[in-house]
Every structure is written in C-alpha cells, then in structure tokens.
Length: 162
Image 1 (cartoon, rainbow, N blue to C red):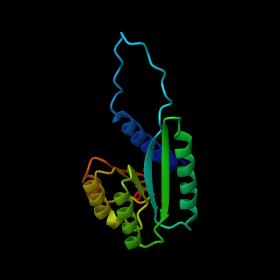
Image 2: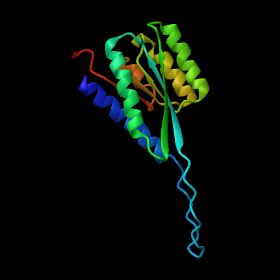
Image 3: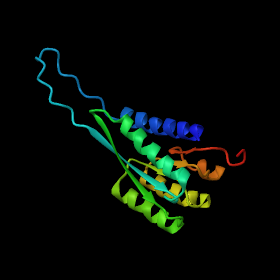
Image 4: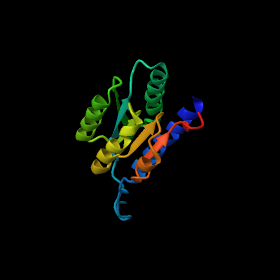
C-alpha cells in the first residue's frame, strides 16, 4: 500500500511541477526604475477532480484521506488545491457522468479509480478532447489505452504481478 501511495504522490507532484512550470515568467522591471512595493501575490488555485469507484471500500477510504492530506501539504501562500472527490457508487455510467461534470467545470487534472478498467478508453478520449491530464489509480487500464495520449499515467501495482 505504501508503494501505491508513494507512486500516486509522485504523479501528483509531477502534475504540480508541470503546472507551475507552465506559468509565464513575470517580466522584470527596468533597472532604472525604483522597485515598487509588492502587493501580496494572489494564490493560484488548481482544481483537481477525483473519481473513486466506491466510497465504502476500506482501501479507497484510506486512499481518499491520503490524497486530501497530501494536497493540503503541498499548499503554499501562492499555490492552493481545490480537491473534489466523488463516489462512483460502483456504477460506470455514474462515474462517466462525474468525469463529464468535472471536465465541464474545467478541472486542471483528474485522478480516476475506474469502476471498470475496460472503460479507460472512453474516459481517456474525453480527457484528451478537453486537454485535461488524467491519472488512473489502483485499476490498471489496458496498455493500448495508456498509449493513446501523452497526458495519461497509471499509479498502482501491476495487476498481473499482484
């Protein structure tokens, strides 16, 4: 379990670093001008949507708690995370609707614990169309689904080895 959490945290950190690196650099003031008093920088908030296959699964309850705690630990005066976690209730149609809602709301990234790993192609295509990175957790999509796009990754154990 610690390996899975560690891998998830690495993936989330990678998204955070990529998001921070994508911000345009601030222009420097000309050297001849006196520096003005700096107003406190406004925090950038990243919206993260998390779809869990079923909330009453004990392992996924721990996973949710760790995700929330981890994103809180990443926050600074200039970077905040708004993490919304939803329950798929073991229903793939429900989870697909949740993904659609997150994409319509303009989330910056999705973390998805699939109800059915066979639905990864559908979710990936939706995220690709919206240009929203997606991290699949705990249920590994098929290799061809993972190769479909460069803003996709899987964090979890190899099901064949497990």
